[in-house]
Amino acid sequence: MKIRIMMIKDFDEIYTLWKEVGLKIADHKTEEEEVKKMITLNPMTNFVVCDGMKIIGTVFGIFNGRRAWIHHLAVHPAFQNMGIGSLLLKKVEQALKIVGAERVCLWVDKINLKVLFFYKKYGYREMKNAICLRKNL
Ligand SMILES: CC(C)(COP(=O)(O)OP(=O)(O)OC[C@H]1O[C@@H](n2cnc3c(N)ncnc32)[C@H](O)[C@@H]1OP(=O)(O)O)[C@@H](O)C(=O)NCCC(=O)NCCS
Image: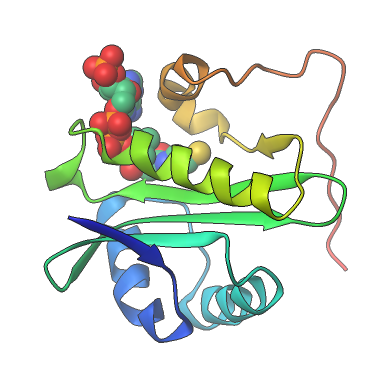
């Protein structure tokens, strides 16, 4: 098992992984364009875990200069509950700190509240005084 920096050429494999994991994702083209931009803007803070040649886990760490965000933390179902998600979380936090982030946020979908236990175990807390808003541009 090895953690390494994510590369744009990993995209097809990680898209398949996200479908197997059941992540709520956009279509192939949209995700591919976003992944290219995320890797280009944050080349040192996105990781994959490999079992041999096969990618079995992903995480993005995106720092915008003020806040950092974690996206698409995912571990292949056959490899869950073996500590890999915890390892990826630690790795991305360390990498974000190195590029200057002091605080990290993440988004948990309301249909995926079961992962709150996982994040809370590692010190993440719900924001009581903020509501997330969005708009399509
Ligand atoms: C969340 C996820 C990345 C965790 O990865 P993992 O490799 O299974 O995590 P770990 O093995 O490091 O587990 C760490 C702890 O969290 C717990 N845990 C992991 N997934 C959990 C879940 N879905 N619900 C409750 N607890 C969970 C484990 O039991 C373990 O606790 P323990 O050490 O006290 O037994 C993985 O479950 C996953 O890919 N889920 C689907 C994608 C997803 O929802 N991602 C989060 C998007 S916000």
